[in-house]
Structure formats: C-alpha cells, structure tokens
Image 1 (tube, helix red, strand yellow):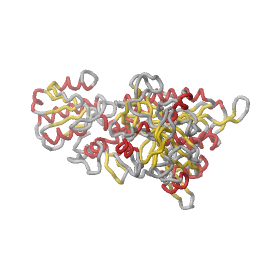
Image 2: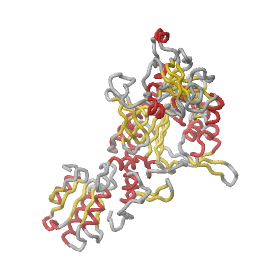
Image 3: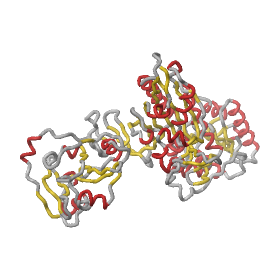
Image 4: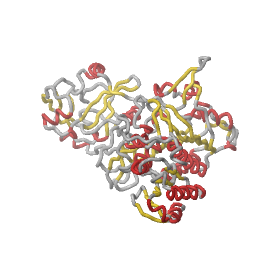
Length: 569
C-alpha cells in the first residue's frame, strides 16, 4: 500500500482523555478513532492488526477441533429471562424494543444463543461432543468506559462453547483450550499469566482460569507464588490462616477488659492514638445479603473479599449494611461494633479464628475490649477464608514461596459451565440407554479488540508502537526520503514491487513530506522493519532499521529483501 493513498493521519499529541499508553499511541498512530464514549472506529491499520489477531485465533481454534459459526447480535430477551440472567446482568445489558413491542438484548456474550441453537440441532449422544466458536462484536453498557479499547461499550470477541456428554469430556476440551490460549497469546508476543479466577456472572459448576497480560495499568491484581506455579486473581487467591488447635490455652488468657476510646472508630485512629497494631484488632463489619444481616470478622490489617464472603454466606451478592441498619442490628454505630454478645450470625475469617486474643469493639459507643478470645468470648459459628490475600504471605499450595502481586489486563477467560445453561434452556440429549440428560458445557472467551490494546500496552518505546511480526499491519515500511529524486524513486518502487510479489506486505511512504516527518511517523506506526531509501540509493543501498532493537545498518537492497524474507533481521 502507498502511504499517499491510505487513510492514515498521525497526531502530534494524544487527546487529553487518553490516559494509558496504548490508548494514546493507537490514536496518535492512526489505528483507531473514537465515535462516542467506549465506541471506536478502526482505521485501515487498526483493521489489519485485528485481522492478523483473528487469523491466529482461527488457526488455533480450528487446530483445537472447534467449528466456526456466526450467531446473531440481536438476541430475544426471553432467552435471557429463561436462563435467569436478564435481571442480574442489570444496567450493563443493552436492551431495545422492536415495533411489535418485543424486547431484545444486544449480546454481551452468547451462552443463551448457542445453547438454543444446539438444543434444536442435537438430540443424541452420537452427535456429541461438539465445540463451536465465533468472532463477533459484543455490547456492554459500561458505567465508565475508559482506557480506550480496554474498557469499551462495543468490542470484538472470540467466544467458544463446548457441549459434551460428561465431565471427563469437558475436562479434555478445557485442557485443549487452555493450551490453545497459551499458543494464541504467545504468538501475539504477550507477557501473560494464566490464573485461577472467579466465574462471576457467568456462573458454572467447575473451575475457570483467566489469562492476564501483565501491565501496570491493569485493573486486576494477581497473586503469584515465588516458588511454584500457583497464580490467582486477588478476588480468588487463597489466603493463609488456620484454626488454632490450642483450645486449652483459652483458660489461661486474661479476662476481657473494657477500655475508653473516645471518638476512636477506625483502625487508623486506634493505631495512631492507642499504639495498637492493626493485626491485633478484630474488625467487625455488618453485611447484608439477600435481605439478611450478618456480622463479618476479619483482622484489622486485612480486607474483606466480598466474592469469597458471598460464597461463604450462600448468597448471590453482599454489601455493607448502611448506618441505620448497623445501629438497629448492633445497638451502636459502626466502629464500636464487636462480636461479644452480638445477636447476629457470625462469619469469621480463618486468621481471626487463629488469634489467641485480640481487641474488638465493645458494642458501646467510645469503648473497646481487650483480651477478646475467639472461641471463648464468641462462638466460632462459621469459619472461612473471606479476605483478600496479602502480598508477602506464604503460598497456600506449596508453603515454600510467598505471594508477589502484579497488575494484569484480562485478555481471556475459560469456564467449566456444567449444566447451568443446558438445564435451564433444555439442551438435552438421549444417551445410549434412551434417557434424556442435560449437556455438559464449557465456555471460552478472548477479547480480540482488547488483545490489540494489550499488545500495544506492552510493546512500545519512546518513539511509538512496536508490533510483533505476526500482528503488524505491514511487515515492512519503505521510506522514500526525497520524492523527486529519480534514483530513490526507482529503488523504492523496485523494493516495493519485489517484496509484495514475494508475499511480504509493505507500506511505501511516497508522500511529499520532510524526512523528519517520515521518520517520526514510521517510529509511531511501529512496523517491525523500516527500509530507508535515501542518499545511498544510487549505490543500490538502503538503511535497515529494526524497530524493536533500534539498530540501523546500511546494506544492499538485495540483502534487505533476503533478511525480511526469512534470513537475518
């Protein structure tokens, strides 16, 4: 392609609302343009990168035995109500009504649609297993779209769904997809980590993994063991803490003592003014879940993990009770609530249960209690891991390493769904004995447009983008320094023709622009190899610029073609 003809405008400065490196560079280099908040157009360069990502995804999905389909974006709301996800998805779901007053959903994901398809096509075990995938636009009404393609309201996604007769078959497909995902992200040149994760709104009965591109701007925190292969999203990472087995020690502990703490309601205040270490404090919080109130106990230096808490409480979700609800339930304002004598169900973190004694609210304004002993002064009604893991604590899997925290961008997620959707939507098959049974399902997603942004976030330098070869919009960028120089024109055209004839995609900068502008744009666009046709054109020589390494070398045009075609880069 000739740069004088391509729809490509670079920007000197990024828009003020573009905060992440990927967002800034993709805008400045002419890959994307914002149409509305969280909604982007892909210019020719951006579309070529997306197509290259799609090509990798299709190759690996096909190799894993999946078959490509294309499902509608416009989905009947009845299907979502049938699956039970219409209400829980809430305002994130984009809905509309047609002229006949029928309600539809713009699909954020396609479990319902693909299950409806398969239930109408497959009725016998003889046609199972089957795995279907698509690459398609999804819609989600994000409350606050941000970071460009990383958090948008319209995005491109690869979603795959497997249907099987049993869990062993699902395990086989899951393992195959796990391997395929690793290959996809490696081919995209990403530094990534597979971590255990929470299924969230997707639900399911089995395990699931997220694939995270490591990046400082990532929204997710990953807990990674320094010694073994254990890694998990912080919302799912197992935290330490064990029940104390020294019950006889309780009798030797001092009796509870009430002491005056006027106006000291927070952990920080107790630490600053009473010199009480946070790890000695038993923090009591009142939570609400599905209309019921319960008390939650964690150590003062720990934070409640609400996903773990909801699972322990057996409810779909939890939230902190408001001020008035706390006063009515505990008889005192938040900050002075304690477990001793509290007439609410208790859910106790393992680390609290393991404490020999601690300091807690007295259930009376301006007072706290010393020497509160778990199991003696309040019952260990329900003990569970309900807190966020802490950086530096021991790995629960190997016990040798410690947690290191990293930030990550979610680029893929795989789930073992089991029968959650097949039972509700009636996707059943006749087994060998003639019995109807629900299909066992798996779900496997990749954010294709998010991948583009994640690669840009990881692969750039001070000059601009640095595309891996398999993703680059073109493999070679030819810069003709002086348009009116005949020797340069002949050599540039010769290189352009030869490379394209050999199947090596090339972008020829034939614009009548200053050399500085051409170099600036080439650095910004980030094509892996730049061939500069300048003053040495009469000697049949070009400057070979390797964008990733930054090295520049003057070589013959024949050697340049040879390197690009598969020899030395």
